[in-house]
Image (cartoon, rainbow, N blue to C red; front, side):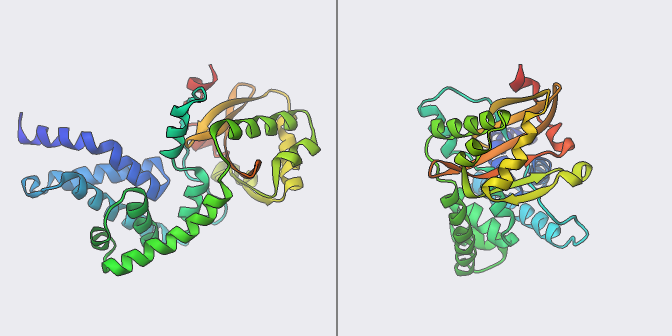
Length: 295
């Protein structure tokens, strides 16, 4: 096998890992794929025979690429400001069992990705590489251009912010989450305001991202009764809700008259819903294969 083909084969074996690293850093499928492709270009132009640990080399390189993308985002003040949700990962909902718990533990929730979006670029990269992918700080230091001690501090700051969200999304097992989400939609369809309030945390937050095409639908709403009022939209004719996994936890795909309209994610704590994330952006909703989940 030619050296180039052998190198490409080795790279493909690491592609899922690199995509996972990039998605957690960027929250964007398209940018993650761009970062993976750029990593391949750099590998193909390097002296691969001198790379002793290919997995570590690829993780370091894609970390640097993602850091540059994050810094470029931060330097674009012309970008719209407001509610923005990361791209979603939608999966088929399995039956209850140990496999579900493994899927939950291996996933990164929408709510957690939203928190990661609030971190400074170097904080996000340091936290993701260390806490999610167990890269040592001396290697992370080379990625962010800091000393190992400074990289440790960056990751620690990110960890404090993330811990707050994890406390808000500590709602227990798969079955508990699905039961609450189902109760939310049942109450919404019946116009049961009290029933909605009963499953919502008093300080629940709803974040809706309509993207450029539906900017008027973009909103951030806090409080059980305001959020319950918004849920009256599910009483409209032609609306159907399909249970799926959204970033590894029970969520929903929503259609109206057979056309996809939104993807919804939920966070849970203490037997109540604490966060609702609604992706309404037609372009990104359209990228989800609804037919695979609504047949």
